[in-house]
Image 1 (cartoon, rainbow, N blue to C red):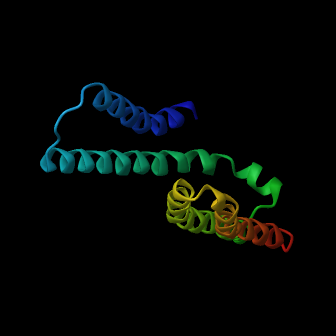
Image 2 (image 1 turned 180 degrees about the vertical axis):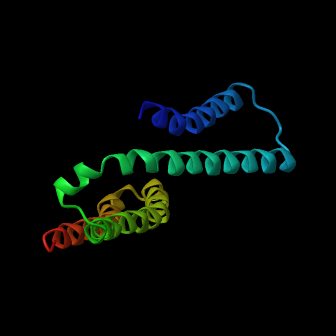
Amino acid sequence: MMWLVGVLALPVGVTLGMGCWMELKPQRLTARWLRGGLLANLLLFAASLAVVMGLGVQEVLAAEPVAAATDISLGRGLALLGIGLPTGLAAIAAALALGPIGSASLAVIAEKPEMFGRTLIYLGLAEGVAIYGLVMSILLLGKI
């Protein structure tokens, strides 16, 4: 199983290494170089995903008695994945809302510092979307 972690960590390490290298030695990048880098990153991701899927299946199939003992079925697994969706999607929606609201809040606070309290209310309303998604996931988890 450790080799599987190594295969998954390789693209992350390469990406971090390239980021550090580009930060230390800044260059003027051309569109052709960026397209090549993007294509290489996508190919590396697809290859590592294929390796993980192909070789990880053997690990899962070898653990059949454990799966029978825990009483996890395909339907229950899909239900658990579906329960996690509201939290994830609500967090993404809250992040998309907080970006423009936060930048507008900073602009207003720079001009009128007394508006700080009102801007916090708007930020709290946008963050409430993520909390509602978490509450929905907790409620759905109780239904299983």
